Amino acid sequence: MSDKIVVGLDIGTTKVCAVVATSDELDRVQILGVGVAESEGLNRGVVVNIDKTVAAVRAAIEEAERMAGVTVRNVIVGIAGDHVQSFQSRGVITISSRDGEISENDVQRLLEDTTHVAMPADREILHVIPQEFIVDGQDGVADPIGMSGVRLEANVHIITGLVSAAKNIYRCVEKSGYEVADIVLEPLGSSFAVLHKDEKEVGVALIDIGGGTTDIAVFEDNTIRHTAVVAVAGNKVTDDIRKGLGVMRDQAEALKCEFGTAMVEMAPEEEIAIPGVGGRKEKRVGRSTLAQIIQPRLEEILEIAAIEIKRSGFSRHLSAGAVLTGGGSLVKGTAELAAEILGMDARIGRPMGLTAGLVQEVSDPKYATAVGLVLYGLRPEMIGNTPFRTNHLDATDPSGGGDNVVRKIKDSMMKWFHEL
Image 1 (cartoon, helix red, strand yellow):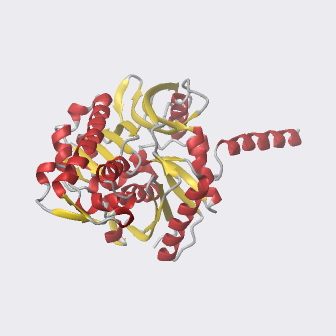
Image 2 (tube, rainbow, N blue to C red; image 1 turned 180 degrees about the horizontal axis):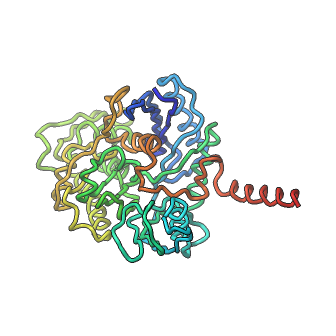
Image 3 (tube, one colour; image 1 turned 30 degrees about the vertical axis):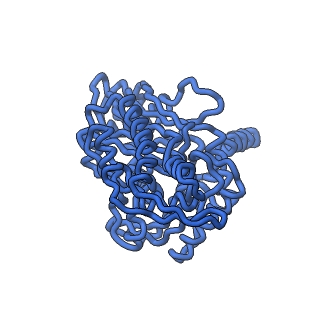
């Protein structure tokens, strides 16, 4: 077993999930520990109560630590929320080396050039993902390192988020007593766990239905082409059941998970007994009545996903169809409803690529993001041929966002003055 132990932390609207994993010398992934805690400090994927989130993060990581028998110092954390936006950008540089060979430094310089875009002060870049490189007008280059050329261009996919949302996540993790090693967009994280390589090549849409947000990612030619986060998800389904049947929230959640069906015609002829509120006698409700409440909301979520897939411009290229994951996809019949609404094949995605340890415990769609984060931590090259490091994700000083960058510049300037 290698010494490299990675912790993925999915801070969700309904649950906080921590997964501890390692890989052996044959690059096989082993799950060592899993911890889950109820989350009450988030709304639609964004932190709204620091103390409650800190308590949930601490509880989830401590449970995973106990199970794995290790002490966790830093974590790879996911970020979501409808503040996340993405767009395409392009950059160009000239190759300065004497022999004209393109080095990794040139690629990093080019990717940095693509980030010089006009952006509001309250937003920061989370990821820069290369789509393709162009060497001296020759397009379609996947990895230009080692090639000869004079002019190097790149088309990239840039994902941005609110500075305050990212800082609040950092703050929650740090207050819990841990450090942030990296911050990753949640649909990207989920994609590492539930998508096959050949699906990414022929074209696939990932729809991760969580509690507070639905995350969408579109892949084609092994590259992410479009990302979006929508603030309509599983909690809305639970709210509809709560209001429609006049039950408590936890009862509504239990009804959805245990007896819910996504399509009315799939609901069996069966009645469910619901305990009465405040000492009243119990009610009996047919499963088809429950399905009549669930179906319209799931249809709305999938229709919004269909709009986002269309916006990507790749809806006709998705030969592998759609993959649904996240806790919200566990309602029976969701894949069939998705196939009907999206007009393409749909399947439920469960974490794959795990060989040992607690594989059974995490092979559930609701663990897709946390498992994806540890897979990314063990193999960072999954995000693109050349993962670009933005300043706030500095691996040498993972603890504190942009403030550290300013401090580093100040320290180096002081050093120059002392040398003078």
